[in-house]
Image (cartoon, rainbow, N blue to C red; front, side, top):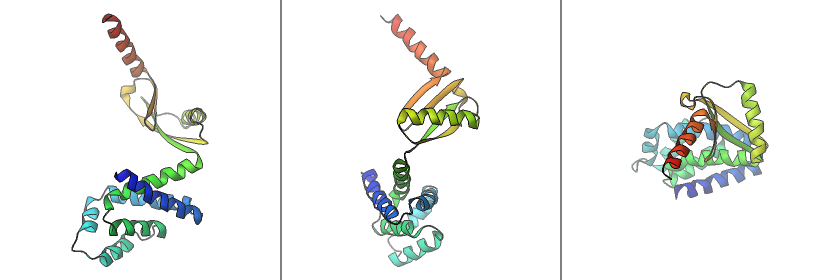
Amino acid sequence: MSEVIAKRYAEALFQLGKEKNRTEELIESCRVTAEVFQNNQQLNTLLEHPSISSMKKEQFLEDVLNGVAREVVNTIKILVNRHRTGIIPGVMQTFIQMVDDAKGVEKAHVYTARKLSNEAIGELEVAFAKRFGKKEMQLENIVDPSVIGGVKVRVGNTIYDGSLSGKLHRMKRDIVSINHV
């Protein structure tokens, strides 16, 4: 339910950003804001406290979010006044995803046993961008020794497993299923 509500606020912020041709500028403000609200539960507790007036909360937000884009600050003020501080990180992340979708950019993770070179990451980005019909793919390399060799790529909820550990697991599963026949 909160994802649906977060999406509505993110869409409103996205439309406002498009109208003012400021979506790129708003991305950094959204990243900073999402991080601040995700990593600081005390901030949420303070903003949800019933004995603190709305005016004091708004002034506090102005002070804390100094340098953050006005559109983002106003969105947060609305969320605080409507007692929806818990969805602020979700709103910000959904907004960033909407901007990426509009630009044809997809973000993903590539898991490898060792760190890949920038050239290898670039080749994977081109290959997966074509596969998904995107203009650009941005891969983050995550070193995971359990991969053993090869690569495992996660795009959204889809995993492409070309790792040695994945192949070994599939072989084991096939052998077990043959023995049960």
